[in-house]
Length: 91
Image (cartoon, rainbow, N blue to C red; front, side):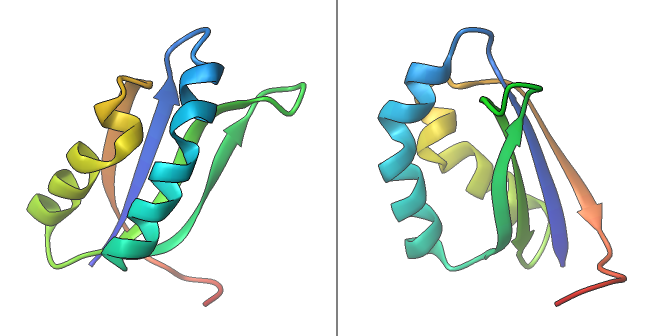
């Protein structure tokens, strides 16, 4: 199943994001369940959150993935939403 993870960073947390980016990318590579991903940007192109499309067995697996993301463990996010998603165009 595809699940959209939409996470918003805490205000002023850009340095937390930068400090944990390498671990986050390694986690994505190691887990092998990320279909698409990228940062959300503000009007000045600064990173303010994440959009990750997970390809997982169920919502429990999506939640487990989100909880173990190094960004989440570092306390980067103000909020995280996990929403079942249906691909209609692309990929």
